[in-house]
Length: 265
Image (cartoon, rainbow, N blue to C red; front, side):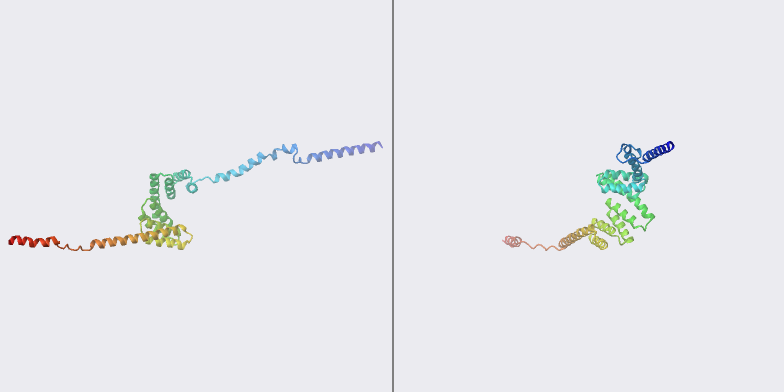
């Protein structure tokens, strides 16, 4: 009997220890002090891990070459951040001094900031760079096109027309190239040819509203020029007509017989 009681007591103690061990192996319940103090679930640690994941992506957006700085400068320029655009184009040229587009874009940035002398120098540098590209790749239409744009910025519209015309010959189905050719022709008052260029641009891209507006202006310019030339022609013809001879005045005709009578008297 005594042995039986001892065995029962031992079993009860063993079961109690097992129950305690089972409770100790369970994770702390949400909202308990143990759960709140757990370093593994700390929000700062999670935020730090997220920051480490984002950091490499942010670093990749920074320009690493001249082309990247030109792309950044273009976005800054479109967003009216002309100072930032200027700095980006300057950095592009530091990395790649003969970068034609960077010179041209730098000129645009200088113009927006009212620094016209520096803009002119930048456009002149762009002309030299694009001329070099044209010599190296004479069949590349974009090279001729951008050369024409640089010439136009310098006010050399005759050279701009030549470059734009060559671009349209090499790329006849580009609406923008025909449009810019028409603009250069209009600046030289060659309205008939400009009208042809604008019509071609619109036929390729009916949604090119700039070409539509420019076409209206060119047609008005052609009408004014035609009226001016007709007026000049009339004026020239009038100046070439022979003047009628002056007839003797009545006073002179009556005076002659009076003198004769005096002599006869």
